[in-house]
Image (tube, rainbow, N blue to C red):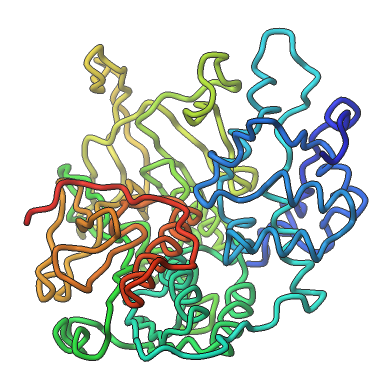
Length: 502
């Protein structure tokens, strides 16, 4: 244990963010090196970890991160050992430290105890997420993460389709195990949503490039601009490789089937974010002021209140939107969690991403009934109505609460329904469940021998930490199959399953 009384003497201290007027003028991360906590401050935060007899944070983290271990090593100022412990369960802690919503912190005993009546001593959860990122970033800065190429190669090859966090985690594990791994990506650059879906103000692209450089040096091969299913068929993929892993994500967006959806100016949120990120990366010229997906000077309406909606808000703010309104059908959550609403359930509380500090208006308990357009077919407003939750869980409109919200650009951030329709799915004879996910077994293998599925494609749209965990677990399963022997690779999670159509 770092300090048996650490949580009694020290309260939770969040990492400082850049000032709003400064950060909305650029696309750099909200947290910068200038606002990094000092080693002494980080050690003080790590000392609050109690190394609980039953560390719920282990179960709260899909990767099973050894959180008390590397908190203790941080407190003892043994940073290299902390990095070794951290990387033993997580290939990319610099990603999760920036992008994960930290279910481990919700599971922290200090967080749970803080809900007990009259208990103000705990001071809130340990700042696990920031300590994790700091260990990883320091390891990179200190040169502690050289490439780890295998000592010898097997005669087996693995083709991985998709280069998001699940595909990259599986690729690194299998490459280090000695297999020849080829990652196929239909975009022009590697990274999946971490490349073109997540804005730079959450994670700058050099963080991704740094890790990809390490993976190339280890031997992982990347093929960009390859639309698997078209440029190479499913059968050709099986002919080339001893195993195939699909980590194609879950980008089939949920639609809003209301009158006026066909009007110009209404787009899926991911279309908007992808184009904006390409402009920031320099892959596209700066958008003209009258470009459809440029929010500058426009009244922006975001329908949906999750992380994707927050990313749209931050992006529209930086593009210079005249007005931003975000709608959610759910009522506004309470400021504090109910004492009965504790781990293992995710606490239902009002949360604000950094983007919400920067502007915009959040409206709750509203449902979109229709979009209204002008004579040219351009959206001009949304007709919304207040809703209340009925006993059966449905949302019922409140009579007389209808109103119009003006909008020139509407972004639909309503979630996702499994992988997009892709030729490779049909070519490999894969099936979907009712939620649109690709079906797989306990070993991540589908009904087609040698074909595996991991990440959002099989789990449904989820967290980056789940994607990495599934990628690692699928890699262990593939490695065992190829070797016809138990794998030495760790397998942190069992996949979410639905009955397979055999």
